[in-house]
Amino acid sequence: MLTEELFLTLVEQASLAPSADNMQPWEFRRQNGSIEIYCAPLRMLPTDAMCMFSWISIGAAIQNIVLAATEYDLAAEVTYKTIENTTEPIAVITFSAGVTKSTLAGFIRMRNTNRNPFRTDSIDTGRMERLNRSVTTFEAAIHWTTDGNQFKQMAYMDAHSSYIRLAHKPLHDELFHILRFTPEEINEKRYGLTFESLEVPPIAVHFAKQLRYWSINQMISNAGIGRLVAKRLSTKLMKAGGICLITTPNRNRIAYMEAGRAIEQLWLTATAEGLSVQPYGVLPQYFTKKDIEPDFFPLRYKKAIAAHEEPFYSIFPNAKDEFPALVLRLGWVDKPSPRSDERLPIEEIIRKESNK
Ligand SMILES: Cc1cc2nc3c(=O)[nH]c(=O)nc-3n(C[C@H](O)[C@H](O)[C@H](O)COP(=O)(O)O)c2cc1C
Image 1 (tube, rainbow, N blue to C red):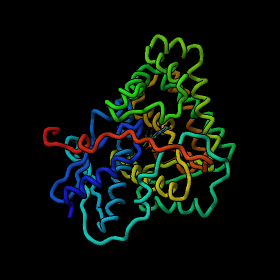
Image 2: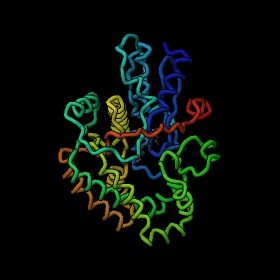
Image 3: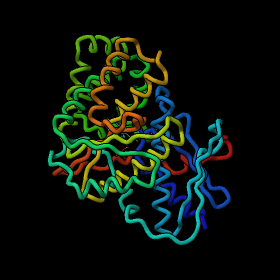
Image 4: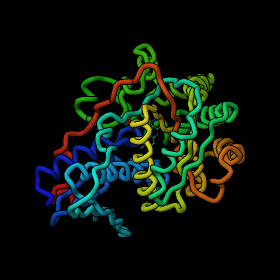
């Protein structure tokens, strides 16, 4: 059933999935009529706690394959592998004939991250129900706030965490490893974050470039400029129709891949509903990192992160016994933002024997 042509089509749809910092940490291989899913260690963020964001991203790519296969009347079944050695496939998708077409497949190409301010009209109950229903088949949970005061609290916590990405050297170095400053860099790599997709004005790009030098960055950080920029970016959390938190029941690779599938299903449903979406990874990532690798953050940052936990779970009280995967800001915009098409060519995400 899975011809080479169809395999390439499904891989192309998978590649359009969202990924943390656009790292596209996935690879695919056609094997005995199924698709094997691999991670791509060179495109996995080294500081990512338990590689959670890589697994979420791979889960999103898997979900695109499942949905796109329905266009060809194929039902896809995903089997997660519990192997330790990630040179083996971490999941396998098998196909069987006969399935109802998913209307979401048509939105895979339209979905994008929109980093503009959204309108503040709340997401209505009908839409919220449809969004909630979209994730019920996955082992993940969704929690909402549509309260403007809580948006403010989220913005405060985001601002008072994101500055750490510039201030703590391992995070700073990683950030400048994935940022792309010139068209040559973009064309050469085809993964990582471009300033265009971040919607940063050219003057700020010139300023940001200087921050790649740790000594300059420290000077700027000490002057409190990093905190100011973080605060500015975080204010967009106040411009939303709703903010949701996706959680997992466990902290392991399979749970995060499952959450990734739920996130993509939710995001595509939101896109079909005319809603824009922006993920906010920093709080779930730092809460997890602090628990899993307590020595990673210097004490002052650890304290700052820990101080957010109580207010965070007062916004999402039913998530207290679960594990945070990703926060998403949703809402309507008057002008949609263009899709970022920075993706690796298909041949570079197809697993070759020699990659083993
Ligand atoms: C796990 C995960 C975490 C993300 N975190 C953020 C974030 O904190 N801020 C943000 O603006 N975008 C975030 N994104 C969005 C990615 O940057 C985006 O998906 C990627 O650049 C590709 O762009 P696209 O979604 O428009 O296709 C995240 C995406 C994923 C899957």
